[in-house]
Length: 283
Ligand code: ADP
Ligand code: ZN
Image (cartoon, rainbow, N blue to C red; front, side, top):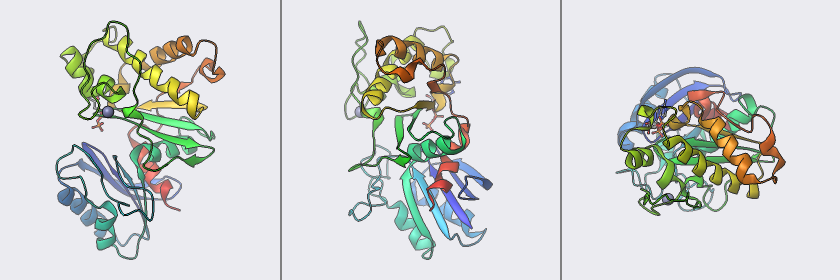
């Protein structure tokens, strides 16, 4: 039995499946306190057997570098009660024989989309989510990028759109990309939730401007062959097209990838990208 868990800021998915990303059975529930959330996932799995391996895909920041003191822990998150909680500790306690593999939710989603989704067969792929926060997972040369922590695409500083004086809402940086363009940033800036804004609302031009500048930075550093933009806010009609158009403009003739008709695309696996990726993390 292979288990996967995708731990999100608002919801968690626990499932059993295969390392090819096939989900056999899954359960979705709200993310609450660490003890309650992990307790529920562990009880659900225990009722189905003893997993041989568990792939854990979690919201960041998390310690994912093996042999560091903070491996397996949730790090400095504003989410109450989670900072310092050991995800791997909870699973190791419940299933001492299981092999645990941990990565970010967005790295897992990038892996799944690159194997069986919107970037199938590509080795240089970025997966961006725009929801309560903004995150990015990076597959480069077929390998997930980690680094000393892991990529934190949402906390990139991007140039200001002319005339924009919205201060931003990131508790750490104010006007980083997440502070300017996440779902809660849209709500704070325009006084209405992202899902309530019509397709021709000026918010979407602003969104496309900031996201295109974030993606331009990725082009300059990791040169992805395709960029997948998912998360709740990405469901806004026409957003991918607007980002592509703005990106072509600001790339200014450089970065030939952006001229491909489908450079920035929605995920093909939709809500399942993270949990499929969690299985694929298992070696
Ligand atoms: P989380 O990041 O917590 O997992 P989601 O990815 O579901 O959450 O993102 C939630 C955000 O997505 C909210 O800000 C919500 O307003 C926005 N959202 C949901 N549906 C849509 C939609 N159809 N169009 C634009 N924004 C949407
Ligand atoms: Zn920030």
